[in-house]
Length: 375
Image 1: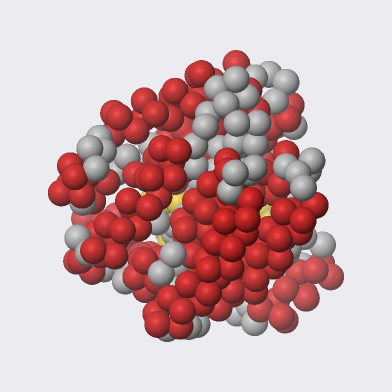
Image 2: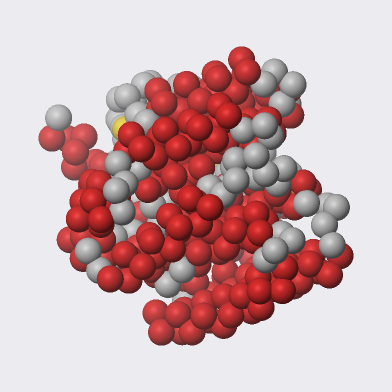
C-alpha cells in the first residue's frame, strides 16, 4: 500500500468531511478537533518509533476517541463511524509491519496473522454499518472497500471466513454510488474510487469512474474546477507510453531538456513546497541519488514553486539532488494533479514505472530497471 499517498488523499477528503459537518454540536466538534490535533502530532513520529511505542501511542489515542464515541454515539453515529474507520485505516499498528516490511514473504506473514485478521474484521464491521443516505458521508471509505476487494488474493482463508469476494464488495460500492440519496456522497465516491483504482494500476476502471462522475454530476465542484479532467489526463500518462518532452531551468539557470537524458534512466518527481508527502520523500530521493545516481541514472525534482520557497525547501529538507522549475503547461502534459507524482523513465524515453515511493525506493528502482532489461 502506498502509505504516504493514501494519507495525503484521505486528508484532503477528510477536510471536505468537516465542511459538511459544520452544523454539528460545538462541544462534539471541539472534541474531534482536539483528537485530530493529537493525530497531527502523532503522524510525524511514525517514521522513527518502534512497534511497541507505536502500539502504545495508538491505544492511548483510540481510548480518547472512545470517550467521545461513548458520549455522542447516539446523536452522531455516522460521523463517528467514519472517523473511526479513518483512524484505524491510517494509524493502526498493523501499518508498522507494512511500512517496515516490504519483502513479499514478510507481507505474506502479515496477511495470515491474527493481528491482521482483527484489523480487517474491525474495518469491515464499520463499513457494513455505514448508511449510504447519510448527509455526512463523503466517500472516505471507498478506498477501504477497494482495498478489501483484494483480500481473496492476499488472505483467501480470511476472505472466505468473512464471505468477502471481489464481486460482493464492488456491488456494495456500486450500491452506495447508484442508490444514495446524498448525491454529494455519490460524486465523491466516484472521485475517491478513481484515485484508488489508479493506485492499484487499474487505469481503465479509474477512467470509467472519472467519466461517470463527469457525465452524471456535471455541477460537481471537482468537475467544474477541472480536477477530474486533470485526473483523466493523469490516467493517460502511465507506464508504456513515451514521456512528454519538456524544457526546464535548474535553480542555477541552466536549461535542460528531457532529450538530454536519452540513453539514460531518469527518476523524475514533481513536488510542491507545502506538500507534507513531498517532504517525506526527500530522504528517499537523496538515497537514490547518492547510491545509484551515475552516468546512466539521473534524479530530478521539478516544481512550480517560486525561487524563495525552493531555496527554503532545499535548505530545510537537505535536498541533495538537482531541482528544476517548470510551468503549468509541463505539469499539465504530465497529468499532475497531486503531489508528489514520480516517473521512472527508461533510456528510450518510455515511462516504465509511476509513483514509486517509500524508504526502499532504491530497491524498487533497481527492480524496475532489472525488469526493463529482461524484456
